[in-house]
Image 1 (cartoon, rainbow, N blue to C red):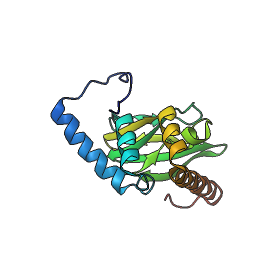
Image 2 (cartoon, helix red, strand yellow):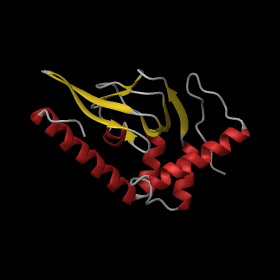
Image 3 (cartoon, one colour):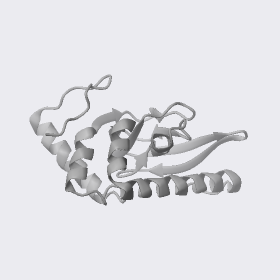
Length: 170
């Protein structure tokens, strides 16, 4: 039997059985649609889903703060977020992301501080995954690690292009 998080995050509560089933179905749809997690086999998806917990953020909430330690990555279930980074000349908007997007993966994969700030543009529901649980899955599924590393590299290139070029957000 797979287990969820060992402690509930602040403000969290256990889900009722009907809520849990509905959430499980929604998380499965998101993971199935995720380019990153699609390559997991059935047991891997089950482990991933069992290790996540749902977080809700009201519009305007800072979900991730640049330069802070990052031990959690998120998969957006519902809502939209803005990703921005602070530079010596001001703040640069990097992207607006929605359903199915991963956020916070750079710090979780690299062990570095957060490279951007993520703000909820609307009310946002995410599935949160603790770094140590994601690392275990990545250790067992090198293909997922490779995809996540590619995502991190692509985001880094996009960030540099946005900072240097100052073009429209992606």
